[in-house]
Length: 283
Image (tube, rainbow, N blue to C red; front, side, top):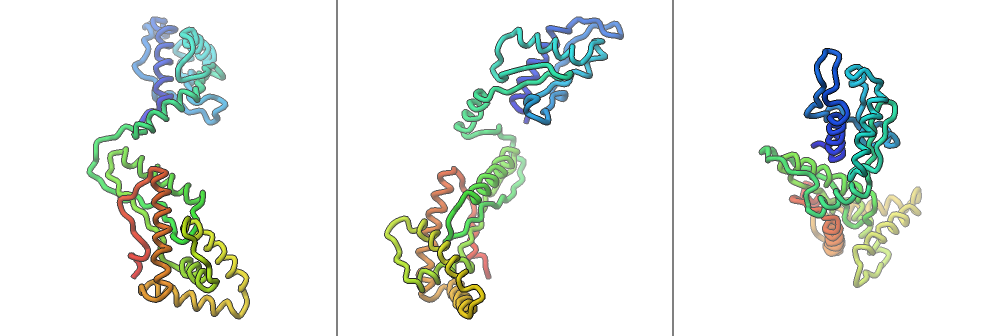
């Protein structure tokens, strides 16, 4: 897909080439006619200080028997005569390049409009292929943080790009709803007689996980550490079997986390076609 900036820059360059050089005598005696496209010549400068799109004029130097800088300056002047440009805040000739600087407000308006319409990229015909994009493996019984947000957004962008390319995408996630991190926080809640609040339980659960982690660190290297780890192993065994008092505590706490998890996904506009819970995949 050609960027809107390159497309707009090409339109301006082609018009300027026609205005400035159309009909000019060439070394072979013929007259110059502007090409139908210069898209392949447009570049993205290595530094945005040099512009956001560049048009090198060196290939035209020999053709018109002028230095690249003069060619770039003449093209720049022709474009500027047409007045302010919708997509570019500034256009200048430097070092034989015609440099286009984007207009940030116009770009923001353009992309915001596409985002609100629900289609950033125009869809391609379906290829018949199907792939699974698995991302955002959040854990239950833990606090959600900005690091999770990065993976969520990155994964969803990949899925959107693949889908826009004509491939059927199955969006999948693999929540960590079973493991030692859960036996640890449940052990802490029960042994420390923590009172479960009547609201904001998922947020409270994340706080309990942080407290349990710090509490266990206080036993590092002490005789009690081995015994605590043994207890946590037994708790995990009961969770896997679906029996015992810790399993009874596990069920509602897991639901608190999942409800918050889904609320976060809804807020970001992210959905999944398949949820593969660790508790259902472990054998």
